[in-house]
Length: 217
Image (cartoon, rainbow, N blue to C red):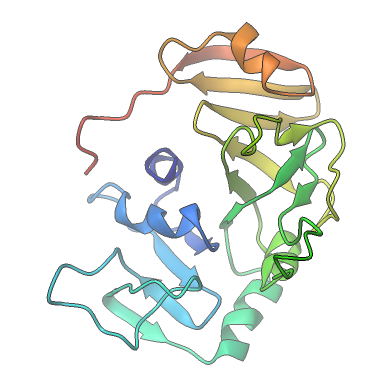
């Protein structure tokens, strides 16, 4: 999912990476493309994961994973990182989610499980501050129930903000005409994908297999 999402990031884009799978994305951007990664804890110009022996314990992403800086990258104050978000300076934010509705509603901050306290972090700011929200998440939950729903059952982070969903089975666009399947993993059929999805899915013109290279670069 992280590899696939990385391929869609345009040259020169300022991109926030949310906690979880999205933080892996910085390691998969094509080497010929410049993307400036932002982390809400105060990093601008974040690189991929460090190589063994090159770890800096004081340089982490929003999920507390060790990361790196690209040439010209910098630390910024936590407040400045949020000014970038709230000021509309981010082109894309890649976020994890518990659920996404057919209208692009996002639920990613609590499942209301008392054993797992909620952690909104910067999600609400990102959901309304970034110019485009794309979600990376498993297509179903641990019980096999759909995460893409008619209406979110969990409290919303923001309404109508998600434009594209990357799952372990497909790439799906949220459009005024409904959910459009742009890509599916090899061997997947629309009927099988639909059985794992509440809202109606439609095949986008030119829908193709989602082919990850044997070794992503």
